[in-house]
Length: 380
Ligand code: TRH
Image 1: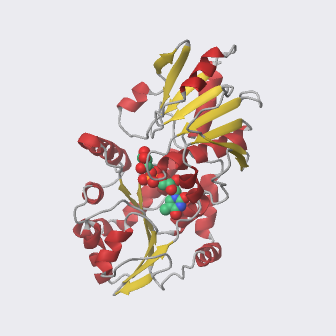
Image 2: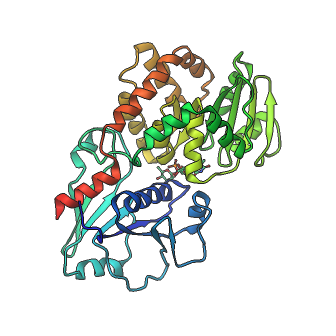
Image 3: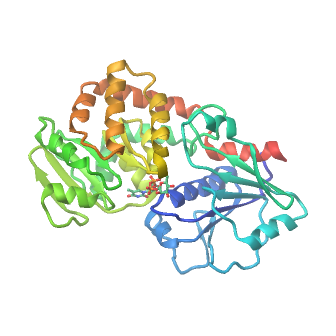
């Protein structure tokens, strides 16, 4: 493993939402906590960061947070020595002067692009390959993924054990939920909902409200709230709002810190998630889930969705796999999902087992931070 003093620079531009900072913040913390590395995290938007980590001082050019040297990536770059390892997250463009500093280093450095997560087959072939060069400095592709031969997924040491322990401790869950103002409706299944705007939502809420089984739906503040409000027939929804419609209780939560969001996922019987980071965290919760994939031009996200579904549903019976495929595809297309939800409910025990098995199978892979460190060790 690399010498303790290795210096790593991670660059993050917040393109939209929270995935870019969500992923890089987790990675930076883990490299510090588990690999004793000196990590600078350069972020261009500290306000987005603050939502996930309220301790962030949005006016500070530099600050330490959980051992990570957090730097506000300034519009006008100041001369800075390059690190030993440089990670450009999601193909972000590094400052020209920093790239010159990289090329000027006497000791060569490792430069990597941390790519988007995809289950597509081609990822295995491209992971670790050389990409472009800047002067004498070679950049490499680093692809997260679900299959051997990829860079794996972000997973902190002991995460799955911690999650299972929490899931077995009803008192700890109750306390945690109460801290967020959640008093679980009796006998209700707990469902979390984090998604982009979705025209298919109304059909789901309708089915949930008419179901014999009560549902307590937890909706963190965000883009889906407008659709929830429309279905409820209320003008707007604010944090703390609770509305009951027959079997369905809808509660609006604040946007919580990242580690609290993880716990919320662990508490729920079903998690609707989106983007990249919450999608992975729901998998670690080991519970059935629904993914609202981030839309891309020319519908290329649909290939990603299908590639993941093919892996995720491979252990299911044909009926259960069909129900999952129908549910996930309809949700990401913004189509009604009420009928698909009912079809999936028929296979619930199998979907629960599958979620656990998938989580354990993925937990056998090396985690992404360790794989990055290993990549560096192999490179020197
Ligand atoms: O926010 P996202 O949609 O992020 C993105 C971006 O759109 C990005 O541009 C795109 O590249 C990427 O997805 C694929 O969804 P994601 O990735 O799930 O990120 C959300 C983060 O917010 C995640 O780290 C969890 C965190 N979070 C909290 O910390 N507290 C909360 O209450 C909630 C709901 C989320």
